[in-house]
Structure formats: structure tokens, C-alpha cells
Length: 160
Image 1 (tube, helix red, strand yellow):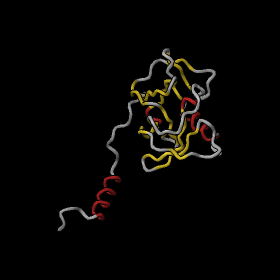
Image 2 (cartoon, helix red, strand yellow):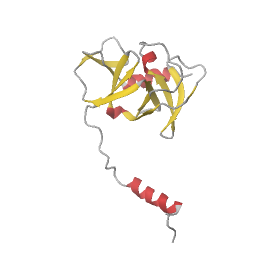
Image 3 (cartoon, rainbow, N blue to C red):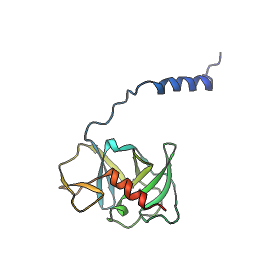
Image 4 (cartoon, one colour):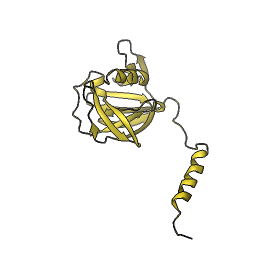
């Protein structure tokens, strides 16, 4: 008998674990992730995110819209990375330096590049946004609640 499990034993154990129902609690209803990107603070419902990670090096996509930084690898997947400030028109497109955090959207392989993820909190009171397609609400302090479905649709239009 070997002191370490054989690869096939590890794989079998992992398969059994994955077959069990998840015991990881989901996000509390309504919690949002607040992030800062240059001059703008944005929020996304926690339920809309697959994860948050540090930015990794980005591979450029020739001919892509200015707000699309390129492709990055995270969670063993390629993510189309978008500059949030440029997408919203609040800042010029950033350099592809890989600094900051990425908010990984759950319903598409899209990562939103921000300077930093600030907190997870209950959302503040929001006024509905009437003139911004990508924003579903604005708080009194200027926090913009992003519409994840609209962001995905806008990003898809910017890819050649």
C-alpha cells in the first residue's frame, strides 16, 4: 500500500464529491458587489457573478471595440475582459496592464475590469435610471447598479 493515494483514487473521490448536492450557501438575496474603477463606483448583484479575481495578463483582440481589453485566463477559462469605465463612458480606455480586479459574470464568459472590488453589501436605495441603458439604478452617493444582461449584450456587439 502506498502512503499517498493513487491518481485514480483521487479522481474517484473527487467524482463522488462532485456528485453530492452542494452544501455551499448561496448569496443572500439582494447582496451586491461594489467596485471602483477610476471615477466611477459600480455595483452588481452577487448572484450575477461567477467570481472575483485578480487581473491576469490580457491577450489583445485585433479590431475589438475600445472598451474591450482582450482575453484573460481565470478559473481555467478564457474571459472576454471589458474596461468598465470606458464601457460606461466615464473614462478613456485603460492600458492592458493587468492590474486590478476582474468581476466574472455568471451568464457569459465576460470579465469586468475594475481598479478594485471594494465590498459586498446590501444595496442602498436606488432611483431608476432612465437615460443609461447599462445602468438599472443610481444611488444618492452616485453608485451605479449595472444591468448584467445589458452589459453582456453591449459587450457582444463590440467583438468582431
